[in-house]
Amino acid sequence: MQYRKDARSGNELSALGFGCMRFPRGRTMQTDTAATERLIVEAVERGVNYFDTAYIYPGSEEIFGDILARTGLRDRVFIATKLPLQKCHRTEDFDALFATQLERLRTDHVDYYLMHNLSGSSIWESLCGLGIERWLAEKKASGAIRNVGFSFHGTQGEFLKLLDMYDWDFCQIQYNYMNENYQAGKAGLKRASEKGLPVIIMEPNLGGKLASGLPKRAEEAFRAADSKRTPASWSFRWLWNQPEVTVVLSGMDSLAQLEDNCDTAEDATVGALSERELAVYEPVRAAFRETYKVPCTGCNYCMPCPQGVNIPGCFAAYNMSFAVGLVSGLQQYITSIGATDPRKNYSARRCVKCGKCEKQCPQHIEISKHLEAVGRRMEPWWLRAGLKVALKLMR
Image (cartoon, rainbow, N blue to C red; front, side):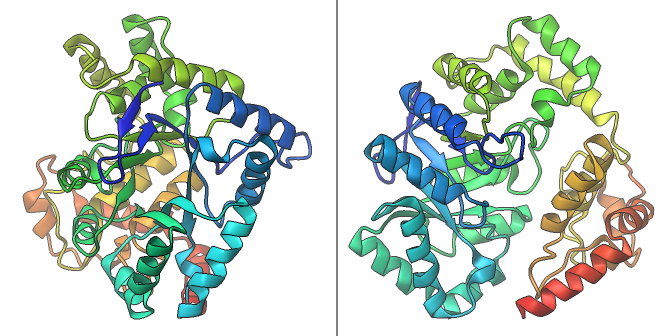
């Protein structure tokens, strides 16, 4: 296992992190605790020391905490978990939620604590109004929280703004070779690194689609370059080739996945990819994008939209709904348009066809026309109704 240093704390973090959102399941679709324990123990033995869970991952904190207590592995790992922002309505909620997490994890401290899905500056401002900064300072002073960060699903502009709104210790972003300019993107990755922050990567395989859902032509391109490497290995190598990347999370649910990822982590170092290998990603991207309906590259030249529409985000989710599936597309769309923030909405339906974006687009996309299609597919009546109810409850 290779390790990358967290310069803020001095911790040596395994380049491969274990994402704990989906543990192995048995025939009844319940978590197979025995299989999960074998996987976690083996991961630690292979050198993995960063484990990422969250309050809202069903059963994850409890199962992980029990395994650490039973196996005596707590002192060999760094626990990362997340504060569920949607449950924070009063100052007292911070303590109540955190106490529950410590109890579930059977520990007296959390090594890396994230604001879960902090997608915009206005959400952070609301948390500050509840006293989150003072609360975090107290927890850090007591040692109950060692490092404070945030996970992000929003626009690049909001990410860059959030970086300067607090003295963060680390951050977590979605990033992979198909999402180089999506959400925080490469610009966000580099800016966070310039500020000295370790950057944790989620969705390295785009929900598994870059590991097992590639078009046939893309798989053939990888195979022709190296018949022994799996598509997942190519994904991780692209990320670990970049010095700004600290930890790459993988939601592994089998020993085969763990072994493949650990094997890759042993030699996939910064700058290890040759020019010939880097060139292989281009035909793969091209094959993947052939399933896309809108030829948007996420360059952001169309931004900012006068109406606040997250144009690249809308198109990325729309394309994903065809390339991967409607459910995955809708999930991405909801986060891309800021639908969970009552004060902001970057919906495709806000387009007034002013034409400003189309003048800036280097791909000459008929943006207004495509946004209409996005609105029809990605905002069905039942979704709009559900979001309306959810926002009322949040208010």
